[in-house]
Length: 232
Image (tube, rainbow, N blue to C red; front, side):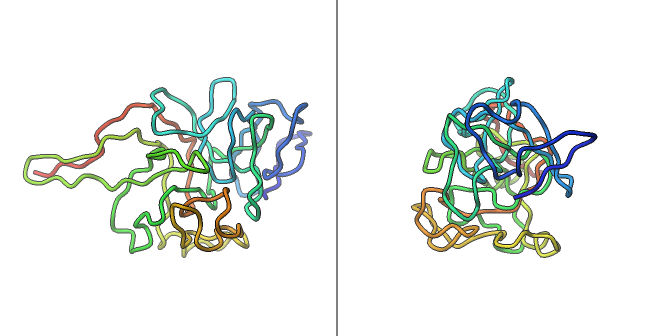
């Protein structure tokens, strides 16, 4: 859990892992930063979410799991509320913090292996989850289509902009990873085969790998566009 800091006399009700029922101690739309410079947005949840899930944020600062079927633009955040050491989650009666800028330790995917356990030489696009699972709101990584000759092969998906996964080489350079967090985990799509961020196996809180990601005020435009690179 990160403690929030702000200018002047701004006060915060607890830390980023705290979540609340009505009356909320903050107004949806309030912002805060921690001492590392990571930025958070207070939202009202309109669906069931867990720590590390990806959410879409509406104009009135309400958040729900980001799905691959969404076809409209939204701001995007990662759920900071709940505890990484338990499967406690938020429902539509809760308000809490989502992270929108900086390093996030433990973003959830719905896949047992996303290929980033190698040397980081393969390029990936971050996209909303390809299929709905439990929990809802994980993200997926798609490899770019490989072009041959003057033809281009690609995959169509709605990209999450301003959102990228740190490769193992970059993770190894970090010196401030919080205790109990890790870059990736051994797991499978029916539930973690081993502990993920301190959560015991086979809970409903995690379904696949957990990655360290960097956020730069991410968003989606809802447009399923070809993701690939042509060669000549």
